[in-house]
Amino acid sequence: MTKENDIQLSNEERQPCEVWTRVMGYFRPVSEFNIGKKSEYAERQCFSEKKATEKCMDVAAE
Image 1 (cartoon, rainbow, N blue to C red):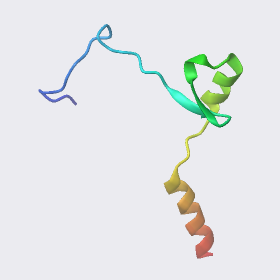
Image 2: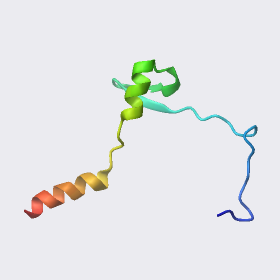
Image 3: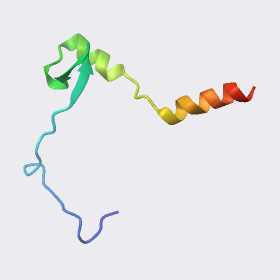
């Protein structure tokens, strides 16, 4: 679904985005990870506060 005023960019016009993450207490770019750390990063699951609080509320209701 595109609108008339949406900006359309070709792949040549796009700028790469550098992703940083916290590792062992400091931030590093993911692009500098070694093979093992890249694999570990790919397996990470994002924390969802909503899911965590729902579980707490279920336990509290018992």
